[in-house]
Image (tube, rainbow, N blue to C red):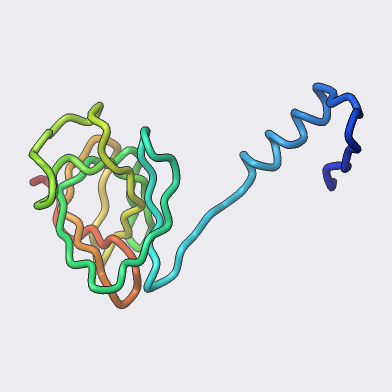
Amino acid sequence: MPIPRVKVGDLITADLFNMLIDAINAMELTAAAPLQLSKSAAGGMTISLGFGYDETCVCELLEDLAEGGDAEAKILWDKNQAATWDIDADTETIQVYAVTDMSGVTGDRVIAKFDRQSGLWLAWQKDC
């Protein structure tokens, strides 16, 4: 259902505001190469150019990761930041994709590499 437009001076009701919030919450953002999509507690959602990005990180899965699937993960360490190793630290949350027979459960630590060609973070080793 489309959100109705209002004119200057119209009353914004709770129903109209809630329709706007529902529409925002229903948005599914994705990025394709050479772009990447990430989010952080401080910066919100960020779409950036991934071309030339050569990164490896250690992250902790925030949800289960099945073979051939994807899951949200929190970066615990990468070569461009001090090693926090703290899941509560203000570091990026990324979407990681399982390769080959890679799978894991919430809380597992994995090594992920950013693949420039696909624009995806690929989880390739678990139990690190």
